[in-house]
Picture 1 (cartoon, helix red, strand yellow):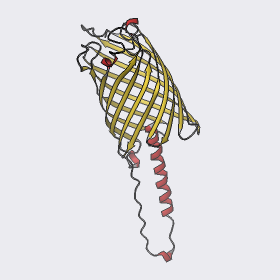
Picture 2: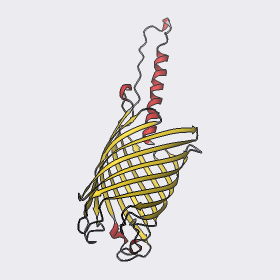
Picture 3: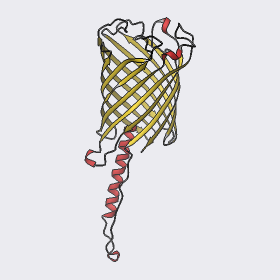
Picture 4: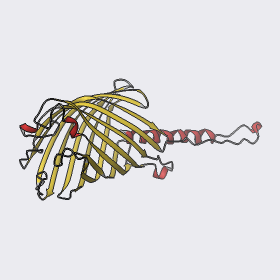
Length: 313
């Protein structure tokens, strides 16, 4: 959505420049003599910083099928991010949107329904972890409604990890996704639109006992009943293929195929340009070709709220 807004801003700027050129091309009255006409190009932000925080109820924190590991909790995800996202002024290359940045995420667990130790009221914080994510991407706008982008990330997970001693806070997993994404938007009227987004990625993992390919397809319907309020209803489908070998004291990472379906809705209120508040609910069901006690086959319900602060400069 941010990329689409950038394209619309770029189109508006080009139209404005064209109108200015048309006006200045008109002949001036002879009695004005020599007149120098100068215009300052519009400055566009090249950098941004944003902080997103969401708190929500998760009915299946460990995304597990096993009854002994299923429990509910409140989860808080805080994501500060800074990035470089220039808007190219040259009309020949204005359809390209490069981006590079750094994101740091805190995954924190709060009050939980009692479960089997150590997943209980007092031990829930032992599941906390962080993710460090430097990333780069290049977006290409074919038209105002059709985008494609290529990206590379490095996700570094730090925490106790379910396969580590709970007294340790270590780097228990690294993932390196290479992905492409295509998005198509179509406005049905001034106040609502539909979109289809496809994403395919190849993920290299460390410990290197598996790799994964993800294929996602998301269908969404968005409305803007007012300038400050927007809603979205979506359905998302994900097919993941794991390829690897089983190692001792690790998850079952043998070859398997997972299929996930997620349905959700959100309401967003943007009182000013730099702040937005949202409420959301979603339900996910996952089925796996291999029975895995820890993950693969599960159902989860999420519902909560979030706030996003963004500043461009």
